[in-house]
Amino acid sequence: MKHRTQGFTLLEVLVVLSLLGVLLTLVAAGLTGANRALGKAERFSTRLDEVRSTQNFLRTAIGQALPLAAGAEGPASAPVFEGHAHSLRFYAPLMPWLGGGLYRYSVSLAAGHRLQVNLERLSDQRLLPAQDEPQVLLHQVSSLAFSYRGISPQGVATDWLDHWPWPGRLPVSVRIDVQLAGPVPWPQQSIDLRLDLSSEARTL
Image (cartoon, rainbow, N blue to C red; front, side, top):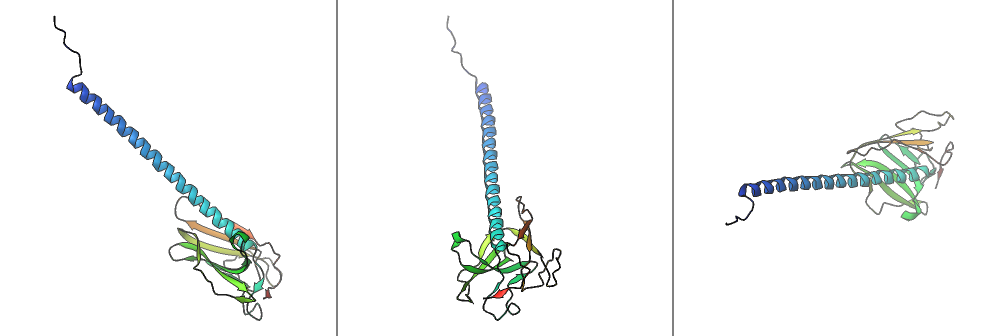
């Protein structure tokens, strides 16, 4: 008696191949989703680090603001602290790990939704023109708002103001509100100046 060799029919092979195709599709979709989630997490982490670094930079710089006016006869003709709703200018030392020295900082929101700072060095009682382009602190900034609180010339404590009306004096605190594009928020930042600035500024 002859024995017929057992095997798979064509239909069975097609069914197995179809199942393998479905499984491979599911595995590929899972890997793609995992890669996307990992990339999204990495971008979120990078963006969060950028926001924290920017806040640390501003906290250090503004916190060290000095009552100085360079290259003028007095504070009335050379403001030592210009605080507006969307821009800020003050004198402070540059962080040692960035080179040190005394600079005038100008912080503003530039075209292209960039938060930037312009640095002008003080040397021999003169304000030197900026040698470099403004430094971008943070991209994708939708809006920027500064507010200020301090002591008036009459010795009265102010509430938060969207404009600092006494350019010859430093405020006590600066608050920074920023709206960012994307999922990473900017926690409202309030910075206390380290000096007691109830006195008028002095001129370099």
